[in-house]
Length: 223
Picture 1 (cartoon, rainbow, N blue to C red):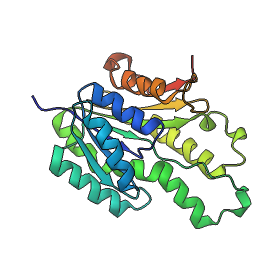
Picture 2 (picture 1 turned 180 degrees about the horizontal axis):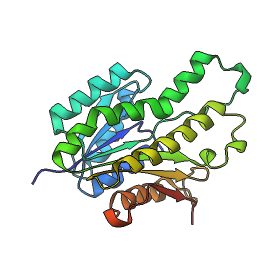
Picture 3 (picture 1 turned 90 degrees about the horizontal axis):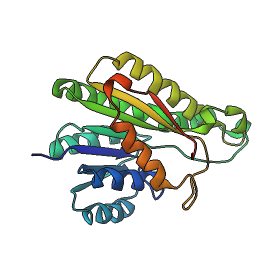
């Protein structure tokens, strides 16, 4: 029996790699998108130590052509992804009036534009197969945007991502393909209630939801 495939787009040393390892432990082959080829190779060794296949896809998620090329490579290697986890976003503190319009739109594209692009690349394959899941890493700033005054593009991006995930799943309801956002309402840090491994377990639980009781948003509040 062929392994299912999980793509983690925006994998990094925190939530991203913990999510990748958590799904590898569940028997998924793992594909990973990030800009740093060296970091991806390090993460790949961790996945392979769990006995699973791993595919490194150096990708600029702010460049849709780069995303398209990487997803084509994934399909050539593993076929249509069974599960896509979108985990991109950057915390950059700067007064909102000092962001140029082009910079601001680039951050929005990173938060939600590339997520949508991956949906457009993968949905028909998932639909044809009759199964598929999209999970999005949401942020507490989408619930409490007034606290995001120092990171306005990220606040706007995570708010847009939350709206995208909820409306996408409303469209998909009754379909074999579903979507959910895991909204992390706290600061991610090891050995706390917001440890990346605990958050990763919430992603796994979200992917295993019963279709009749599916939740399009799960707020991870550390409890």
